[in-house]
Image 1 (cartoon, one colour):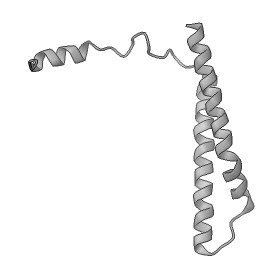
Image 2: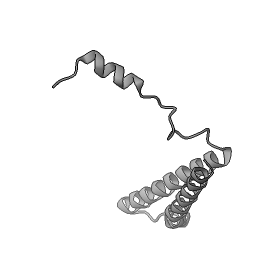
Image 3: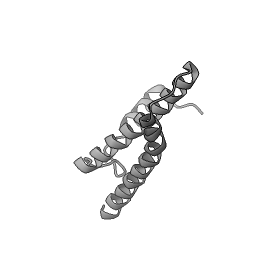
Image 4: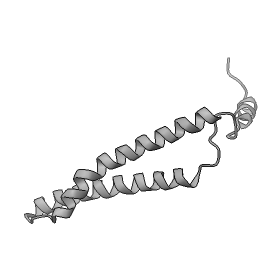
Length: 94
C-alpha cells in the first residue's frame, strides 16, 4: 500500500540532525589531527604519483619524494587510529 506524498514529506522532515547520535562540537585538537591526517595522506599520494610521472618521463625523482611516499601513508594511518581512539574516548564520556 503506497503512502500519499504528503505523508512521506512529513516523515522525512521529522528526522532531525541534532539527535542522540549526532556529534557534539569537535575539539580544536580533533580538528588539528583530522586536517593533518588528510594533509599527510594527500601529500603522500601526490608524491607517489609524482614518482610514477618521473619514471614515465624517464627522469630520476628527488629522493625526498621517496621519503614522503614511504612514510606518509603509514603516518596517516596512525593518525587515523588516533582519531578513532579520540572518538571512543568521547563516546565513553557521553
